[in-house]
Length: 290
Length: 144
Image (cartoon, rainbow over all chains, first blue to last red; front, side, top):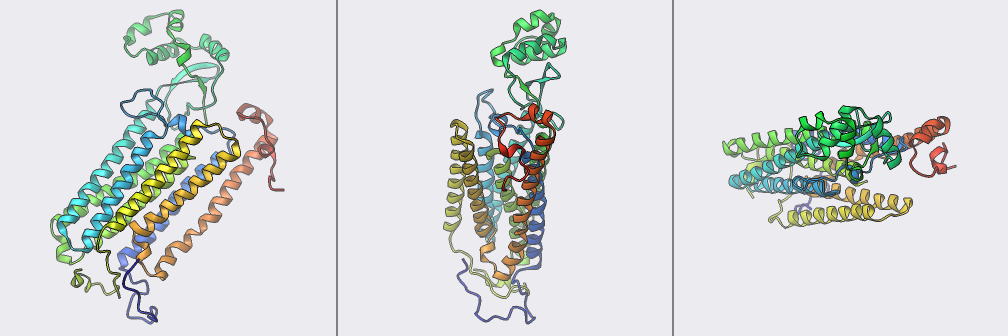
């Protein structure tokens, strides 16, 4: 891509110059990112190993199908697409900041760094919503022949196989009072919780809309461990990237780079930020698409 | 270009001239977005259509290749690795070849573990398998 070619016959290894023609800090950033890619690779590959060793794995389209403000509408892939585009766009604003840095344009650097930070915060906000939605989600599962209402946590996964209706009726009869109260409270949000808790079991069961229960068995609990572990580790990278970008913005504002005469620090922060986007490409692939 | 800005960096012998405009950035943005939309389209296609198992696997393979293309554009254009000299690019890219073994070995291991467990723990197999039992579910050497 470079328009100035390397002088043919340049003896890179004869001393007096860096054989890699790159600043030390930038080279080390590249090597850090390479090692970090193995960390993420190991996490995603172990997810793959466990998934390949399982007879059943939840369908991501059924797990990730919610969008803020759309209630229980079935919208597979929608929210994560939004998150993906937010990260791509914030990567673009980062390149533009680096581009302005090459030209020594302080105002341009500050403008695009600001938008990059906004993009990073937006992504983190989306992730916080998604985690909350997963953990506090209300899913009816059958455990030990009884029904219970659970969310996706590190220890339980509510996305096992569907339970046939006949088995559900049987399980409903064995479900203790608290479980029935939770199911009715889940289906009838406008009812007073104390009033529900005061009903007897037969009255509670008569309140339950069987067609909307969608009872499942519990799924592989490791799904939650990998999901929260890997998206959490990625989110931690996004968070630290935002912090680094904020520091870069303040330094640019205070003319630190003007005094140094170059904006190489912006480039290095940019490398880290793009890497965060790069990792998301593969998290998106492994958890949501395939 | 502010050439004076780079004179303090003894490590850097020559500078690739920075791209004068931002056209290449926007072009790459469009490429990344289009690839993402295609991936989503394929995801929806698999969700709404009941394809045979092998076709699902094939589409998933296509999605993996598209993701690798995205990675190539992010690293090559956004991270400017394509502008570095070859020696430096190789020190970053060659170690990543370990992933070829890493992915193949560990997915194979997972698959083998599943087959062994299904073969020797039939209670587990009956409890967890959700489809008609196929040869690959219990065969420890599917390629033989």
